[in-house]
Length: 218
Ligand code: SAH
Image (cartoon, rainbow, N blue to C red; front, side, top):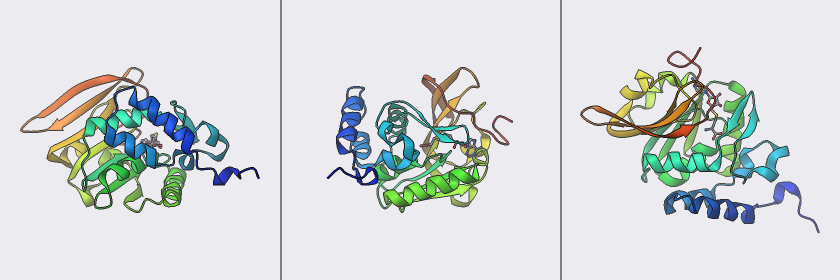
């Protein structure tokens, strides 16, 4: 009997995606997490068959779910550890938050701020269906961070900012790391480390939707 679409596990497709990522130098830990997260539960239903292709997909409201290699690279740069508290800006589909949650484990906690109400609903629903209990999606302007749960071990910004929003730096622990795309038309991904002073390292060229808000684009 043919499998009903919603019952498909897409395991073979997921394995192929992970194999492809492994050829790009992604760490074992991140690959293992991406083998666990059911990406087809985070895309619009009519795009399920493309869920494991390595390119971004539309998720509505003019926003996109990032390409798998971008999620993998950003997680690798953060050097996520079990039990960490992570702030994500831009929940979108909830997929990137799920990968982070998978890596930091049940004792870890992800808070993800999203400015579009429909995407708060979409990501929360996807995360619930996929079984992630340690991710909380909150409606708000992520350029202000989320002071209630600060400070954070790591911060992952998944939309492009004009510069690092000062509240995010304040809410990062000393010794913490943040990944953030910076720029409007030409964008670069930066790894920011908070030590005695702030260290900013340019990693690569990227293409993200804009961070819109008080310390973002207007
Ligand atoms: N991490 C997402 C990618 C989402 S795209 C995923 O895995 O699917 C970036 C998201 O950032 C969009 O959903 C957009 O609405 C959101 N965004 C843009 N500016 C924001 C802001 N100031 N605060 C919170 N979210 C913001």
